[in-house]
Image 1 (tube, helix red, strand yellow):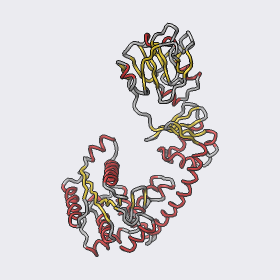
Image 2 (cartoon, one colour; image 1 turned 90 degrees about the vertical axis):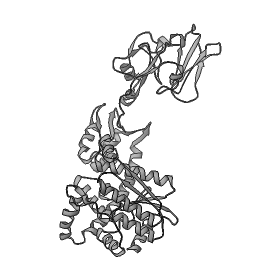
Image 3 (cartoon, helix red, strand yellow; image 1 turned 180 degrees about the horizontal axis):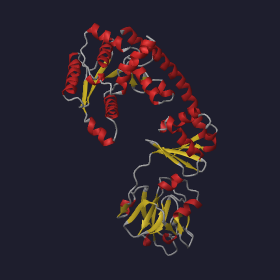
Amino acid sequence: MIDDFKKYIRDNDLTAEGDKILLTVSGGIDSMVMTHMFIESGYETGIAHCNFSLRDEESDLDEELVSDFAHDHNIPFFSVRFDTKKYAAAKGISIQMAARELRYEWFEEIRSGNGYKSIAVAHNLNDNIETLIINLTRGTGLAGLAGIRSKNNYIIRPLLFATRDRITEYCTAHGIRYREDRSNADTKYTRNKIRHSVIPVLKEINPSIESTLNETADRFSDINDIVNEYITRLRGKISEQKGGHLFYNINSLKKYLHNRAVIFELFRNFGITSVRINDLIKVINGNTGARLFTESHRILKNRNELIVSQEPEAEVEPVNIENIDELATAPGIVSAFYADITDTFEIPSDPSVACLDASRITFPLVIRKWKPGDYFIPLGMNQKKKLSDYFIDNKYSILEKENKMILECKGSITWIVGDRIDNRFKITRHTKRALIINSRIKELVIKPLK
């Protein structure tokens, strides 16, 4: 089996000669066998162990076994103890998901901070086919049918070639100590139910079901690579990344509505599942303002665009600004300063710069999100205008309106930040001092005062 181990690593380009490998070792049979084979193969390794504090004394005994093994073999040992239940409750996620997030974040810290090239995880062939069946049962795209990848960035899985039976045989032959997690036998967990109830039935139909399903997953993985390449090219043609958001052209999207597989692959990374395809299509065919929320993203229709963005953050609270120093570091502002009005003074023409009559500005100021009912007197006009109407007239997108901030002085809107000032605060021939506020870093475009 050790020869197959080395061959699998070579064939899948998991490591290179001289690479230091961080081994993630729980104390279970898979990770202990993986560690033994890395040592036998002559790799320079380190061992990382997570104690998730979920099984009381058993968790401590797991850690003790792994620590002793590392010490006996003179291997660097890293360990950490997590309050997994507290973390899961705080984030509103399952214990399993919490453990996954905690361990992989910590593994990467250890890897990058100690010169390790890769992080080795002890998933085996049976884990791969169990994952395939789980995904198939729940509903999935090609990525789910492709199973577990042997390499994903810094994560490598050098045991994916080996069945659980082969690992057990190797463990017995070499007298490797390990600890059994009793929860592995509990069929209340989906994976265990598949392992202990489903796979045995499938083996009655096909005694080689493990290798058959593994080969099937490999084929799906190759097909998935082809599909990903096509989807990446297509996304590049019909969408554009701007300001942290992805904008799809609606007319281009509608050409693919007949093929739900294409729509699914275009949007699956944004939380769209197979059961939500109909909801997504309704948004694409809907009116401006139609929207769909997934667990991670918001998908919004605006005119002839479909805008994909991260789920909006909590509402921004108004910020009180007591002086010019605080103004210079306020949200959306990069600088603020006073300037005396002289014969050579010039007014910036860039809308990202507000040039205000300092005598009309009284602190404290407020920066806040605009709200319905807000109005101002646009520069150059002498009558009030609702911000909502101003946004419509200037063809603001829904996304732009949602994120627009305003600067307020004594209850009056002074500036739509990055856009237009209120006429009541403009520079006049009687102005002696200006307050200049810049909402983005760029060279100012200016024009003479008239």
